[in-house]
Amino acid sequence: CLAATVSAGEKRFETRDAIVARLARGEACDQPEGVARVLRRAVADKKSRRDGLELGLRVLFELYAREKRGAARDAYDRCLLALLGALRDGLDAEERKLLAEAALGAPRLPDAAIAFLGDLCESPDHVALGLGALRDVATRRPAARDRCLR
Image (cartoon, rainbow, N blue to C red; front, side):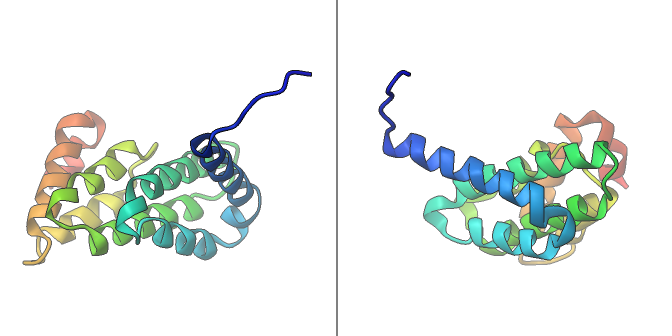
């Protein structure tokens, strides 16, 4: 058996991976509201917002994989919208790209997520955030381009 030293950063990633696996196995399909709550908390703190986004994307990929194996789409859609909503509410001007990164990084972009981004464009407080995210999705995800331009 080989002994390996584990740094603090590696330990953090192992912990995050364990959380993702637990969420995907248990709560994700049975209680999507619980997973959504965890994702909102993960991006709430400015210091760990990028890590929270990565956690959210990992959870979304796990839910997407379950969806492909026959699970309902509802859990994935709710968690994606919760992640986008948490990012919308917590971002400052320098972090606007994180919302677009979440939309671009999601394995599937449902119509509800496109509508969410479009609704941001109608809010005076979030118009720049919405337009920037829609522009990035339209230019970098050609399959979603038509839906973004409606």
